[in-house]
Length: 155
Image 1 (cartoon, rainbow, N blue to C red):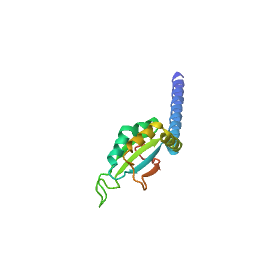
Image 2 (cartoon, rainbow, N blue to C red):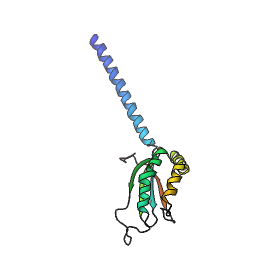
Image 3 (cartoon, one colour):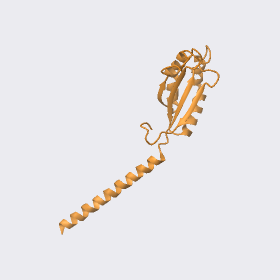
Image 4 (cartoon, rainbow, N blue to C red):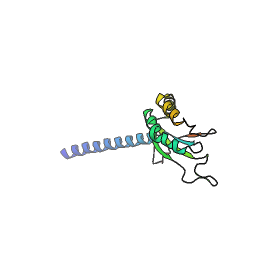
């Protein structure tokens, strides 16, 4: 009789653990379907002729820190490996390409608004452009908001 009681108790424990594990797996699948709310932004800055180095310096020395201050996560920064055919370094199409992240699209809008209103940013921008704007006049910035796919290694 003692053996039967132990077997029943163990069976109930195993059944309960299985039900819990199944529920946890279902919850995880549901969360995956909802997707991570984090939003990425791919930005391309077209530097004014001869200003790419100054633009990079502004990001390196100031902008990245100010982004963090306003809840913007720096993911990575790049320049083109090679210029397009017919272009040379220093051409008007020198680009700074970067990806940043935000907790959500609403957070992105708030972060950008707060960043642009920040007196520290205004001071840095004015000082860095005392010898002329760092971005070209026509189409200086391209921006694309992105959501990671379910198979993306970065989320």
